[in-house]
Amino acid sequence: MKNVTTMKLSAVLLASVILLSGCGGKGNAEVEAAAAGNGAEKLKKLVIAEPLHYTGYLPLYVAQHEGYFAEEGLEVEMLQAAGGTHVTSVVSGDAWAVIGGPESNALANIGNSDPIVSVSNVVNRANVYLMAKKGTAPAGSSDEELAAFLKGKKLNAGRHGGTPNLLTQYLLLELGLNPQKDVRLLEPADGSTVVAMVQQGAADIANGAEPQISDGMSKGVWDEPFYKFHDLGDYAYSVLSVKKSTLEKDPETVQKAVNAVVKALKVIQEDKELAMRVLKAEFPTLSDAAAQAALDRAYDDQLWSPDGVISQEALDKDMDVMIKTGIYKGEYTYDDLVDMQFVNKTAAK
Image (tube, rainbow, N blue to C red; front, side):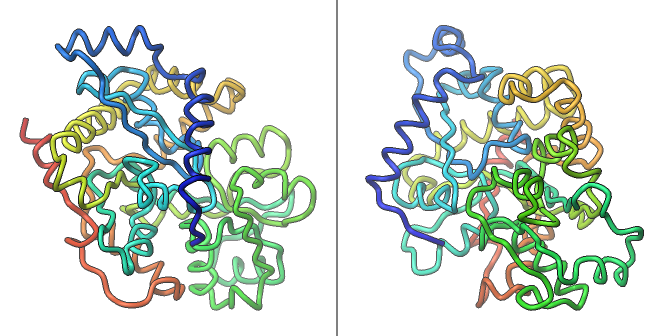
């Protein structure tokens, strides 16, 4: 994981806030009205860093658009911080919270006196898929067929140390392949290049998620994914996390943020029309067909946590991938990485 300076992150933050002010979310008048309706005089502004703007984080966007954060007296901005800087932006203080994998937190916590702790689940499936250049996907899905197909291929695995990259290496190891020798592993830091790299012939296979999957299909770059990591079941893929000092010094704000996220998680399970409306607002360049395909995939694959709970099993699967790929060495405990007190309080209301 590369460190970046606070000055650079501040510049990124400023640019992101300016850009996001014109995108998707409720207008200032609507946010203020929601806050006024909740008896709040002024909304507390928070920044949540995301590694990539994608449909998996739709519950957070729903909480923004539908005023769930505002009902709690909060105004949330999303900061897109690529290349692993979504985590370091929390460490540096440029972001209040981060949405991403707990395994990234575990890496950042090594030698960190103020560790990052996960407070709510969001994406409870390994939201990673493998796509092959159109017309070249393997004929079968047995381990033997997959190993034979993958061997020797140029494989865009995504950012080194990122969960999609680690899951890809994990699969290769499970199939008896050496990620460093049996395939040509490509590790671009910019996740938005997934479609272009296959389209231009720089990669034979790519891992990715929505809206990249639908984008690639609509452009004729690939067909349906030939491998889906969501089959691993409950998996703490993307969770909301803050610094431990934030939990200790300002638990009230953490509770409010968790309340809003859990509300969005519950609403999105039932209201598909609302989900589509927010999806289109956040991803206006997606065609209607691509947007519908992305949403259908999320529901079919049970992408989102129904209640914000991060289970021991879900965390263990995530960390098992880290350990088996050799990225994370040493031990970890659930209590060091996860704090469910806020989700439990929300459920008790």
